[in-house]
Image 1 (cartoon, helix red, strand yellow):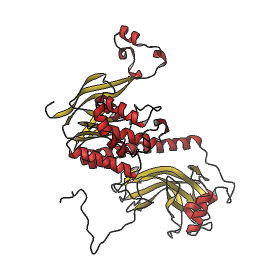
Image 2: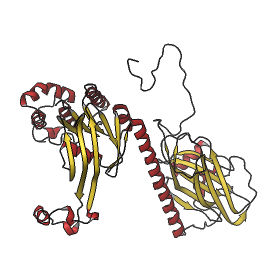
Image 3: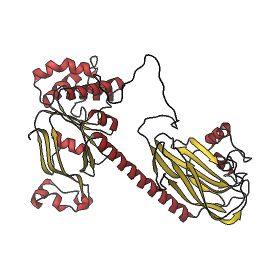
Image 4: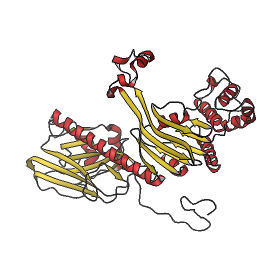
Length: 469
Protein backbone atom coordinates (compact mmCIF):
# COMPACT_ATOMS: atom_id res chain seq x y z
CA UNK A 1 0.00 0.00 0.00
CA UNK A 2 3.01 2.32 -0.33
CA UNK A 3 1.54 5.55 -1.74
CA UNK A 4 -1.87 3.93 -2.28
CA UNK A 5 -4.99 4.71 -0.27
CA UNK A 6 -7.18 2.22 -2.14
CA UNK A 7 -5.96 -1.03 -3.67
CA UNK A 8 -8.21 -3.37 -5.65
CA UNK A 9 -6.56 -6.71 -6.42
CA UNK A 10 -7.98 -9.04 -9.08
CA UNK A 11 -11.59 -8.55 -7.97
CA UNK A 12 -14.44 -10.58 -9.46
CA UNK A 13 -18.08 -10.00 -8.63
CA UNK A 14 -20.70 -12.46 -9.83
CA UNK A 15 -24.43 -12.46 -9.30
CA UNK A 16 -26.82 -15.37 -9.67
CA UNK A 17 -29.55 -14.70 -12.18
CA UNK A 18 -33.08 -15.61 -11.20
CA UNK A 19 -33.63 -19.00 -12.77
CA UNK A 20 -36.71 -21.21 -12.54
CA UNK A 21 -34.68 -24.35 -11.92
CA UNK A 22 -32.88 -22.77 -8.95
CA UNK A 23 -35.58 -20.64 -7.38
CA UNK A 24 -35.56 -22.82 -4.23
CA UNK A 25 -31.77 -22.90 -3.85
CA UNK A 26 -30.91 -22.01 -0.24
CA UNK A 27 -27.78 -21.16 1.70
CA UNK A 28 -27.89 -24.63 3.24
CA UNK A 29 -28.01 -26.36 -0.15
CA UNK A 30 -25.21 -24.11 -1.40
CA UNK A 31 -23.01 -25.01 1.58
CA UNK A 32 -23.74 -28.73 1.19
CA UNK A 33 -23.01 -28.45 -2.53
CA UNK A 34 -19.73 -26.70 -1.88
CA UNK A 35 -20.24 -23.53 -3.91
CA UNK A 36 -23.39 -21.72 -4.96
CA UNK A 37 -21.96 -20.70 -8.34
CA UNK A 38 -20.65 -24.16 -9.21
CA UNK A 39 -24.22 -25.44 -9.27
CA UNK A 40 -25.18 -22.95 -11.96
CA UNK A 41 -24.41 -22.98 -15.66
CA UNK A 42 -22.46 -20.00 -17.10
CA UNK A 43 -25.68 -18.64 -18.57
CA UNK A 44 -27.22 -18.38 -15.07
CA UNK A 45 -24.40 -16.24 -13.64
CA UNK A 46 -23.87 -12.55 -14.40
CA UNK A 47 -20.29 -11.31 -14.03
CA UNK A 48 -20.39 -7.66 -12.96
CA UNK A 49 -16.62 -7.38 -12.38
CA UNK A 50 -14.01 -9.54 -14.03
CA UNK A 51 -10.44 -9.45 -12.70
CA UNK A 52 -10.34 -5.73 -11.83
CA UNK A 53 -7.09 -4.43 -10.31
CA UNK A 54 -6.63 -0.78 -9.42
CA UNK A 55 -4.45 1.46 -7.22
CA UNK A 56 -5.60 4.92 -6.17
CA UNK A 57 -2.88 7.21 -4.82
CA UNK A 58 -3.28 9.47 -1.82
CA UNK A 59 -4.71 12.83 -2.89
CA UNK A 60 -5.66 11.59 -6.36
CA UNK A 61 -9.02 12.31 -7.98
CA UNK A 62 -9.86 9.32 -10.13
CA UNK A 63 -12.76 9.31 -12.59
CA UNK A 64 -14.53 6.14 -13.70
CA UNK A 65 -16.49 6.26 -16.96
CA UNK A 66 -18.27 3.71 -19.12
CA UNK A 67 -21.68 2.74 -20.41
CA UNK A 68 -24.52 1.47 -18.25
CA UNK A 69 -23.80 -2.02 -16.94
CA UNK A 70 -20.03 -1.67 -17.29
CA UNK A 71 -19.48 -2.33 -13.55
CA UNK A 72 -18.76 1.20 -12.32
CA UNK A 73 -21.26 1.31 -9.46
CA UNK A 74 -20.46 -2.28 -8.47
CA UNK A 75 -16.79 -1.33 -8.12
CA UNK A 76 -17.68 1.64 -5.89
CA UNK A 77 -19.95 -0.47 -3.71
CA UNK A 78 -17.20 -3.05 -3.18
CA UNK A 79 -14.65 -0.35 -2.30
CA UNK A 80 -17.20 1.20 0.08
CA UNK A 81 -17.82 -2.17 1.73
CA UNK A 82 -21.49 -2.20 0.79
CA UNK A 83 -20.90 -5.31 -1.32
CA UNK A 84 -18.32 -8.08 -1.03
CA UNK A 85 -16.24 -9.38 -3.92
CA UNK A 86 -16.79 -12.95 -5.05
CA UNK A 87 -13.02 -13.32 -5.37
CA UNK A 88 -10.13 -10.91 -4.95
CA UNK A 89 -9.22 -8.35 -2.31
CA UNK A 90 -9.88 -4.67 -1.59
CA UNK A 91 -7.81 -2.64 0.90
CA UNK A 92 -8.72 0.90 1.99
CA UNK A 93 -6.37 2.92 4.19
CA UNK A 94 -8.40 5.67 5.86
CA UNK A 95 -11.94 6.75 6.70
CA UNK A 96 -14.24 6.38 3.72
CA UNK A 97 -17.50 8.12 2.83
CA UNK A 98 -19.63 6.91 -0.03
CA UNK A 99 -22.10 9.12 -1.90
CA UNK A 100 -23.65 6.16 -3.70
CA UNK A 101 -27.27 6.06 -2.62
CA UNK A 102 -27.87 9.28 -0.73
CA UNK A 103 -29.87 8.98 2.47
CA UNK A 104 -30.32 5.25 1.91
CA UNK A 105 -30.21 4.73 5.70
CA UNK A 106 -32.65 7.48 6.64
CA UNK A 107 -35.76 6.42 8.53
CA UNK A 108 -38.86 8.20 7.18
CA UNK A 109 -40.80 8.23 10.45
CA UNK A 110 -38.25 10.16 12.53
CA UNK A 111 -37.02 13.73 12.16
CA UNK A 112 -34.16 14.98 10.05
CA UNK A 113 -32.27 15.88 13.27
CA UNK A 114 -32.45 12.31 14.57
CA UNK A 115 -31.47 10.91 11.18
CA UNK A 116 -28.40 13.15 11.05
CA UNK A 117 -27.17 11.81 14.41
CA UNK A 118 -27.92 8.17 13.55
CA UNK A 119 -26.22 8.34 10.14
CA UNK A 120 -23.27 10.35 11.44
CA UNK A 121 -22.58 7.67 14.06
CA UNK A 122 -23.02 4.89 11.48
CA UNK A 123 -20.45 6.64 9.27
CA UNK A 124 -17.91 6.64 12.09
CA UNK A 125 -18.38 9.85 14.07
CA UNK A 126 -18.95 10.08 17.79
CA UNK A 127 -22.08 11.78 19.13
CA UNK A 128 -19.94 14.75 20.20
CA UNK A 129 -18.49 15.07 16.69
CA UNK A 130 -21.96 15.00 15.13
CA UNK A 131 -23.11 17.67 17.61
CA UNK A 132 -20.10 19.81 16.71
CA UNK A 133 -20.86 19.61 12.97
CA UNK A 134 -24.65 19.57 13.17
CA UNK A 135 -25.28 23.26 12.42
CA UNK A 136 -22.94 23.15 9.45
CA UNK A 137 -24.65 20.03 8.09
CA UNK A 138 -28.10 21.62 8.34
CA UNK A 139 -26.92 24.94 6.90
CA UNK A 140 -25.27 23.26 3.91
CA UNK A 141 -28.43 21.23 3.23
CA UNK A 142 -30.55 24.41 3.51
CA UNK A 143 -33.01 22.66 5.86
CA UNK A 144 -32.97 24.85 8.98
CA UNK A 145 -36.76 25.29 8.96
CA UNK A 146 -37.47 21.59 8.39
CA UNK A 147 -34.83 19.71 10.38
CA UNK A 148 -37.27 18.70 13.14
CA UNK A 149 -39.97 17.49 10.73
CA UNK A 150 -40.28 13.78 9.89
CA UNK A 151 -38.15 12.86 6.87
CA UNK A 152 -41.24 11.36 5.18
CA UNK A 153 -42.53 14.93 4.74
CA UNK A 154 -39.40 15.96 2.78
CA UNK A 155 -39.37 16.39 -0.96
CA UNK A 156 -36.95 14.20 -2.90
CA UNK A 157 -34.59 17.18 -3.30
CA UNK A 158 -34.58 17.90 0.46
CA UNK A 159 -33.99 14.20 1.18
CA UNK A 160 -30.99 14.07 -1.16
CA UNK A 161 -29.51 17.35 0.05
CA UNK A 162 -29.50 16.15 3.64
CA UNK A 163 -27.91 12.85 2.67
CA UNK A 164 -25.18 14.63 0.69
CA UNK A 165 -24.51 17.06 3.51
CA UNK A 166 -24.14 14.31 6.13
CA UNK A 167 -21.81 12.28 3.93
CA UNK A 168 -19.40 15.11 3.13
CA UNK A 169 -19.25 16.51 6.67
CA UNK A 170 -17.79 13.39 8.27
CA UNK A 171 -14.45 14.62 6.85
CA UNK A 172 -13.46 11.38 5.09
CA UNK A 173 -10.00 10.62 3.75
CA UNK A 174 -11.54 8.78 0.80
CA UNK A 175 -14.68 10.13 -0.87
CA UNK A 176 -16.65 7.92 -3.28
CA UNK A 177 -19.15 9.68 -5.53
CA UNK A 178 -21.55 7.89 -7.85
CA UNK A 179 -23.72 10.12 -10.06
CA UNK A 180 -25.06 12.25 -7.22
CA UNK A 181 -24.12 15.73 -8.41
CA UNK A 182 -27.70 16.51 -9.50
CA UNK A 183 -29.12 16.55 -5.98
CA UNK A 184 -30.87 19.89 -6.06
CA UNK A 185 -31.30 23.11 -7.97
CA UNK A 186 -28.51 24.77 -9.94
CA UNK A 187 -27.24 26.77 -6.95
CA UNK A 188 -26.99 23.67 -4.75
CA UNK A 189 -25.17 21.73 -7.50
CA UNK A 190 -22.60 24.52 -7.57
CA UNK A 191 -22.20 24.20 -3.78
CA UNK A 192 -21.61 20.46 -4.19
CA UNK A 193 -18.98 21.01 -6.89
CA UNK A 194 -17.28 23.67 -4.76
CA UNK A 195 -17.20 21.24 -1.82
CA UNK A 196 -15.66 18.51 -3.97
CA UNK A 197 -13.08 21.02 -5.23
CA UNK A 198 -12.31 21.92 -1.60
CA UNK A 199 -11.75 18.24 -0.81
CA UNK A 200 -9.39 18.07 -3.76
CA UNK A 201 -7.40 21.12 -2.57
CA UNK A 202 -7.09 19.54 0.90
CA UNK A 203 -5.45 16.48 -0.60
CA UNK A 204 -8.37 14.10 -0.09
CA UNK A 205 -8.68 11.03 -2.29
CA UNK A 206 -11.75 11.09 -4.52
CA UNK A 207 -13.23 8.39 -6.72
CA UNK A 208 -15.86 9.83 -9.06
CA UNK A 209 -18.24 7.78 -11.22
CA UNK A 210 -20.13 9.93 -13.68
CA UNK A 211 -21.69 10.06 -17.14
CA UNK A 212 -20.92 13.79 -17.18
CA UNK A 213 -17.68 13.70 -19.14
CA UNK A 214 -17.22 17.46 -18.73
CA UNK A 215 -17.22 17.05 -14.92
CA UNK A 216 -14.75 14.16 -15.16
CA UNK A 217 -12.50 16.14 -17.48
CA UNK A 218 -12.63 19.14 -15.15
CA UNK A 219 -12.17 17.41 -11.77
CA UNK A 220 -10.09 14.28 -12.34
CA UNK A 221 -6.32 13.67 -12.43
CA UNK A 222 -6.74 10.24 -14.01
CA UNK A 223 -9.59 8.36 -15.69
CA UNK A 224 -10.48 4.67 -15.85
CA UNK A 225 -12.74 3.48 -18.66
CA UNK A 226 -14.66 0.33 -17.75
CA UNK A 227 -16.31 -1.99 -20.26
CA UNK A 228 -18.08 -5.30 -19.62
CA UNK A 229 -16.83 -5.50 -16.03
CA UNK A 230 -13.15 -4.93 -16.86
CA UNK A 231 -10.84 -1.94 -17.15
CA UNK A 232 -10.53 -1.15 -20.85
CA UNK A 233 -8.11 1.78 -20.55
CA UNK A 234 -6.70 4.05 -17.84
CA UNK A 235 -4.65 7.21 -17.99
CA UNK A 236 -4.76 10.91 -18.87
CA UNK A 237 -8.38 12.25 -18.85
CA UNK A 238 -8.46 13.83 -22.35
CA UNK A 239 -6.92 10.73 -23.94
CA UNK A 240 -9.19 8.21 -22.20
CA UNK A 241 -12.36 10.29 -22.64
CA UNK A 242 -11.64 10.72 -26.35
CA UNK A 243 -11.04 6.96 -26.71
CA UNK A 244 -14.34 6.28 -24.94
CA UNK A 245 -16.21 8.73 -27.19
CA UNK A 246 -14.72 7.07 -30.28
CA UNK A 247 -15.90 3.69 -28.99
CA UNK A 248 -19.38 5.11 -28.36
CA UNK A 249 -19.45 6.49 -31.91
CA UNK A 250 -18.43 3.10 -33.36
CA UNK A 251 -21.08 1.37 -31.24
CA UNK A 252 -23.73 3.78 -32.50
CA UNK A 253 -22.50 3.17 -36.07
CA UNK A 254 -23.07 -0.57 -35.65
CA UNK A 255 -26.48 -0.12 -34.02
CA UNK A 256 -27.67 2.34 -36.67
CA UNK A 257 -26.37 0.09 -39.46
CA UNK A 258 -28.10 -2.94 -37.91
CA UNK A 259 -31.34 -0.98 -37.61
CA UNK A 260 -31.03 0.16 -41.21
CA UNK A 261 -30.54 -3.44 -42.36
CA UNK A 262 -33.55 -4.63 -40.32
CA UNK A 263 -35.75 -1.92 -41.81
CA UNK A 264 -34.59 -2.87 -45.30
CA UNK A 265 -35.35 -6.57 -44.74
CA UNK A 266 -38.77 -5.77 -43.28
CA UNK A 267 -39.65 -3.63 -46.26
CA UNK A 268 -38.54 -6.31 -48.73
CA UNK A 269 -40.34 -9.13 -46.93
CA UNK A 270 -43.58 -7.17 -46.79
CA UNK A 271 -43.45 -6.31 -50.52
CA UNK A 272 -46.10 -3.74 -49.60
CA UNK A 273 -45.53 -0.99 -52.13
CA UNK A 274 -49.14 0.14 -52.64
CA UNK A 275 -50.08 1.06 -56.18
CA UNK A 276 -51.76 4.45 -55.98
CA UNK A 277 -55.20 4.69 -57.53
CA UNK A 278 -54.23 7.57 -59.80
CA UNK A 279 -52.57 10.93 -59.92
CA UNK A 280 -54.64 12.06 -56.95
CA UNK A 281 -53.40 9.35 -54.57
CA UNK A 282 -53.96 9.93 -50.87
CA UNK A 283 -50.25 10.11 -50.04
CA UNK A 284 -49.36 12.70 -52.68
CA UNK A 285 -49.40 15.63 -50.24
CA UNK A 286 -46.79 13.98 -48.01
CA UNK A 287 -44.19 14.28 -50.75
CA UNK A 288 -44.54 18.06 -50.68
CA UNK A 289 -42.30 18.12 -47.59
CA UNK A 290 -39.50 17.28 -50.03
CA UNK A 291 -40.80 18.43 -53.42
CA UNK A 292 -42.10 21.95 -52.66
CA UNK A 293 -45.57 23.19 -53.63
CA UNK A 294 -48.33 21.14 -55.24
CA UNK A 295 -47.55 22.69 -58.61
CA UNK A 296 -43.96 21.46 -58.49
CA UNK A 297 -42.49 24.91 -57.77
CA UNK A 298 -40.26 25.60 -54.75
CA UNK A 299 -42.29 25.71 -51.55
CA UNK A 300 -42.31 28.45 -48.91
CA UNK A 301 -42.22 28.46 -45.10
CA UNK A 302 -46.02 28.67 -44.79
CA UNK A 303 -46.52 25.52 -46.87
CA UNK A 304 -43.89 23.64 -44.85
CA UNK A 305 -45.56 24.68 -41.58
CA UNK A 306 -48.97 23.49 -42.84
CA UNK A 307 -47.54 20.06 -43.68
CA UNK A 308 -45.69 19.80 -40.36
CA UNK A 309 -48.92 20.56 -38.50
CA UNK A 310 -51.07 18.22 -40.56
CA UNK A 311 -48.77 15.21 -40.85
CA UNK A 312 -47.00 13.66 -37.82
CA UNK A 313 -43.50 12.39 -38.53
CA UNK A 314 -43.94 8.63 -38.74
CA UNK A 315 -41.56 6.33 -40.64
CA UNK A 316 -43.00 4.68 -43.71
CA UNK A 317 -42.67 3.93 -47.40
CA UNK A 318 -45.11 4.30 -50.27
CA UNK A 319 -45.32 4.89 -54.02
CA UNK A 320 -45.94 3.13 -57.34
CA UNK A 321 -42.38 1.69 -57.44
CA UNK A 322 -42.08 2.40 -61.17
CA UNK A 323 -38.82 3.95 -60.01
CA UNK A 324 -37.52 2.92 -56.60
CA UNK A 325 -34.65 3.74 -54.27
CA UNK A 326 -32.65 0.53 -54.09
CA UNK A 327 -29.84 1.67 -51.76
CA UNK A 328 -29.01 4.60 -49.49
CA UNK A 329 -25.47 5.36 -48.33
CA UNK A 330 -24.07 8.18 -46.20
CA UNK A 331 -20.40 8.76 -47.00
CA UNK A 332 -17.54 10.66 -45.39
CA UNK A 333 -14.82 12.60 -47.22
CA UNK A 334 -12.95 9.36 -47.95
CA UNK A 335 -15.98 7.62 -49.41
CA UNK A 336 -16.52 5.37 -46.37
CA UNK A 337 -20.07 4.61 -45.27
CA UNK A 338 -20.98 5.97 -41.82
CA UNK A 339 -23.95 6.59 -39.58
CA UNK A 340 -22.23 8.95 -37.10
CA UNK A 341 -20.74 12.27 -38.22
CA UNK A 342 -19.01 15.08 -36.35
CA UNK A 343 -20.68 18.48 -36.65
CA UNK A 344 -18.94 20.40 -39.44
CA UNK A 345 -17.61 17.36 -41.29
CA UNK A 346 -18.49 16.76 -44.95
CA UNK A 347 -21.24 14.28 -45.80
CA UNK A 348 -22.43 12.80 -49.08
CA UNK A 349 -25.87 11.22 -49.39
CA UNK A 350 -25.81 8.66 -52.20
CA UNK A 351 -28.96 7.10 -53.66
CA UNK A 352 -29.04 4.17 -56.06
CA UNK A 353 -32.17 4.37 -58.21
CA UNK A 354 -33.68 1.64 -60.37
CA UNK A 355 -36.32 2.23 -63.02
CA UNK A 356 -38.53 -0.69 -64.06
CA UNK A 357 -39.45 1.26 -67.20
CA UNK A 358 -37.87 4.41 -68.61
CA UNK A 359 -39.42 7.68 -67.38
CA UNK A 360 -38.88 11.20 -68.64
CA UNK A 361 -40.56 13.08 -65.78
CA UNK A 362 -38.95 12.74 -62.38
CA UNK A 363 -37.68 14.71 -59.38
CA UNK A 364 -35.27 13.46 -56.70
CA UNK A 365 -35.74 14.99 -53.24
CA UNK A 366 -33.88 14.78 -49.94
CA UNK A 367 -35.02 16.11 -46.56
CA UNK A 368 -33.34 16.00 -43.15
CA UNK A 369 -35.54 15.85 -40.02
CA UNK A 370 -34.53 15.81 -36.37
CA UNK A 371 -35.92 13.43 -33.75
CA UNK A 372 -38.77 15.88 -32.98
CA UNK A 373 -39.94 15.72 -36.59
CA UNK A 374 -38.70 19.23 -37.39
CA UNK A 375 -37.51 19.65 -40.97
CA UNK A 376 -33.93 20.90 -40.67
CA UNK A 377 -33.41 21.11 -44.42
CA UNK A 378 -35.10 19.92 -47.58
CA UNK A 379 -34.40 20.32 -51.29
CA UNK A 380 -34.92 18.56 -54.60
CA UNK A 381 -33.63 18.59 -58.15
CA UNK A 382 -36.56 20.68 -59.41
CA UNK A 383 -35.98 23.39 -56.79
CA UNK A 384 -32.36 23.48 -57.92
CA UNK A 385 -33.37 23.85 -61.59
CA UNK A 386 -32.41 20.42 -62.91
CA UNK A 387 -34.70 19.63 -65.86
CA UNK A 388 -35.44 15.91 -66.18
CA UNK A 389 -34.79 14.22 -69.51
CA UNK A 390 -34.66 10.46 -69.01
CA UNK A 391 -34.20 7.91 -66.22
CA UNK A 392 -33.75 4.26 -67.12
CA UNK A 393 -32.05 1.19 -65.66
CA UNK A 394 -29.81 1.88 -62.67
CA UNK A 395 -28.63 5.37 -61.73
CA UNK A 396 -26.68 6.96 -58.90
CA UNK A 397 -27.54 10.32 -57.34
CA UNK A 398 -25.26 12.08 -54.87
CA UNK A 399 -25.85 15.20 -52.82
CA UNK A 400 -22.61 16.49 -51.31
CA UNK A 401 -22.78 18.59 -48.14
CA UNK A 402 -19.39 20.29 -47.59
CA UNK A 403 -20.08 20.93 -43.89
CA UNK A 404 -22.83 19.13 -41.96
CA UNK A 405 -23.47 21.92 -39.49
CA UNK A 406 -26.19 20.20 -37.48
CA UNK A 407 -25.99 20.27 -33.69
CA UNK A 408 -25.50 17.01 -31.82
CA UNK A 409 -28.47 14.66 -32.05
CA UNK A 410 -30.31 12.01 -34.07
CA UNK A 411 -31.59 12.78 -37.57
CA UNK A 412 -33.73 11.03 -40.20
CA UNK A 413 -33.79 11.24 -43.99
CA UNK A 414 -36.85 11.73 -46.15
CA UNK A 415 -35.99 10.43 -49.63
CA UNK A 416 -38.23 10.66 -52.67
CA UNK A 417 -38.44 10.08 -56.40
CA UNK A 418 -41.64 11.53 -57.83
CA UNK A 419 -43.20 13.28 -60.80
CA UNK A 420 -43.34 17.06 -61.10
CA UNK A 421 -46.90 17.08 -59.79
CA UNK A 422 -45.79 15.22 -56.63
CA UNK A 423 -47.08 11.77 -57.62
CA UNK A 424 -44.61 9.45 -55.80
CA UNK A 425 -42.68 6.70 -57.48
CA UNK A 426 -40.94 5.88 -54.19
CA UNK A 427 -41.08 7.83 -50.92
CA UNK A 428 -39.05 6.70 -47.91
CA UNK A 429 -39.87 8.60 -44.75
CA UNK A 430 -37.52 8.28 -41.77
CA UNK A 431 -36.20 4.82 -42.71
CA UNK A 432 -32.57 6.01 -42.77
CA UNK A 433 -31.11 7.42 -39.60
CA UNK A 434 -27.80 9.06 -38.71
CA UNK A 435 -26.34 10.90 -35.74
CA UNK A 436 -24.12 13.93 -35.29
CA UNK A 437 -21.75 14.42 -32.39
CA UNK A 438 -20.13 17.65 -31.29
CA UNK A 439 -17.74 18.78 -28.54
CA UNK A 440 -19.71 22.06 -28.40
CA UNK A 441 -23.03 22.30 -26.58
CA UNK A 442 -24.96 24.38 -29.11
CA UNK A 443 -28.74 24.58 -29.01
CA UNK A 444 -31.28 24.86 -31.78
CA UNK A 445 -31.01 22.95 -35.07
CA UNK A 446 -27.88 24.05 -36.93
CA UNK A 447 -24.47 25.44 -36.06
CA UNK A 448 -24.18 28.49 -38.29
CA UNK A 449 -20.67 29.58 -39.43
CA UNK A 450 -19.67 32.52 -37.26
CA UNK A 451 -16.86 34.27 -35.40
CA UNK A 452 -16.63 36.55 -32.34
CA UNK A 453 -14.88 39.91 -32.04
CA UNK A 454 -14.41 42.13 -28.98
CA UNK A 455 -13.23 45.66 -28.35
CA UNK A 456 -12.68 47.87 -25.34
CA UNK A 457 -12.47 46.82 -21.71
CA UNK A 458 -13.20 43.11 -22.06
CA UNK A 459 -10.73 40.27 -21.44
CA UNK A 460 -10.96 36.51 -21.68
CA UNK A 461 -8.91 33.69 -20.17
CA UNK A 462 -7.92 30.70 -22.23
CA UNK A 463 -9.79 27.47 -21.42
CA UNK A 464 -8.14 25.72 -18.49
CA UNK A 465 -6.17 28.80 -17.41
CA UNK A 466 -6.00 29.13 -13.61
CA UNK A 467 -6.78 32.24 -11.60
CA UNK A 468 -3.10 32.96 -10.81
CA UNK A 469 -1.87 32.73 -14.42
